Image 1 (tube, rainbow, N blue to C red):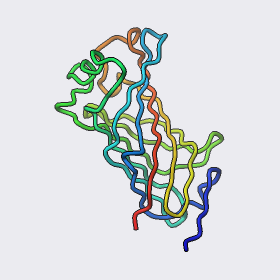
Image 2: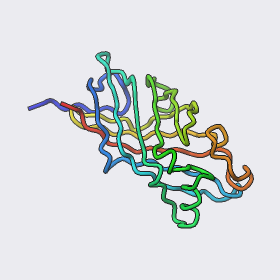
Image 3: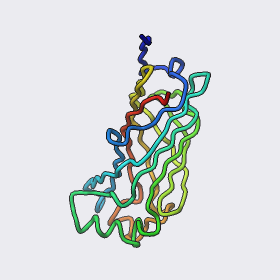
Image 4: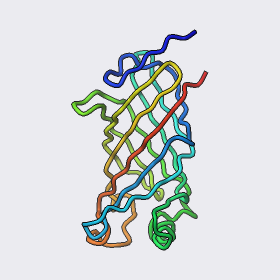
Length: 178
């Protein structure tokens, strides 16, 4: 029987290997500010993802891909508009991807410098990773970042209507590949 260890405070005991995201238990949420007042969240379906933990027990890469056409807020008219070529242009750009490199310890958990690719444009992002917990076979984490929507070409409406910065949060579960 395998020994199980769990950590939420240190990356030194993370089990090495490649971890596959459980797409049915992982979510991506994008939140925009409307008119500077209201938060408007929308969810995206995760289609694939992986985490690489090296022999030094360090997270060296995180990759997540989401289905752009799965964008869903609580407003059908908004959803249709966001999926159009005015915003995500899902017919030409069917996926949204995120990549983070090495994860380092910080005062508020862990941080990583990464990139997000939306509508075919890649932009750097700083990612805060929290609630990092792994056993020998399963792992979970949450991550958050702020994306400048103008830098990735999602800029159809002025910033006073839809805020320039979008919040991106990921809640993920993963299992270690054999």
